[in-house]
Length: 311
Image (cartoon, rainbow, N blue to C red; front, side, top):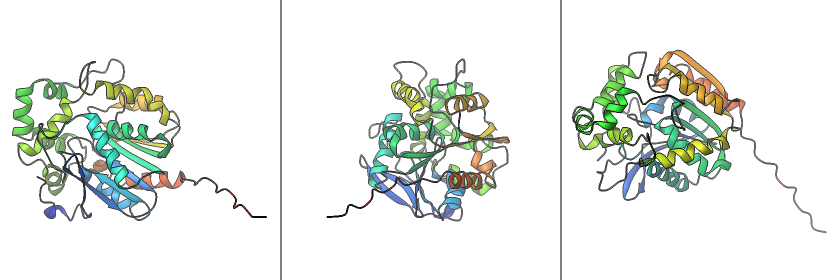
């Protein structure tokens, strides 16, 4: 069951829409007209993370931002009803593209787990992807010698502790509103981030995302990540903007260096005074920077064949 959004409409004034995926309500917003920009969030956020970017771009672009199953306003089924794994996430996003007939000229904006989900979907439709916006995320295995941070390792591996802390006390979502930003969040913004995760049942995805991080062959999503990692090069020539908060304790400078290596022609804007929730720390700067990037990389339609004349 999704939470009541009405008390947060001042911050998130977008019309809610739903698609049924596997019998579950998959929430999304679809604002504006023009070339589509698809925004893919991570954990423990929801489409609320992109609200400043939706407002900035929807006057000139068609902006789509979804909530993954278990997140935001989407349904939050139990494990017996939904497989909380990466490939299923990609399938869901793919279903949304098909539902909305998004068959070309796509821009993807991705953050956190949205990088792996979004790039996994983008690689299925590489010919449709015209621009990429990459925000503190990964779409590859950790850089060489980079271990999983201890905080994530504990949640991933210590199941009893993780269940109590993440599902019992909402520790993951709660602490993120303090640790993921450099600039303190306003009270009402914190409340909106946490609102979807208000009960044990509704916190299932925040835990399953962490438990789905693959660290070795045989882990459920290892092969999917390996496939994305291997084929990411197919997107390296797509115009790309990388916006990066350097004070991110997971996606740090080593991950940024890996993106630079794989996408050597990308435009990069790194912020010393921003953390993981970069669109919170840089809400007054980054959306305008993204708009400028899109303007400077217009999608050019292929030339039309000349009309045939009859003799």
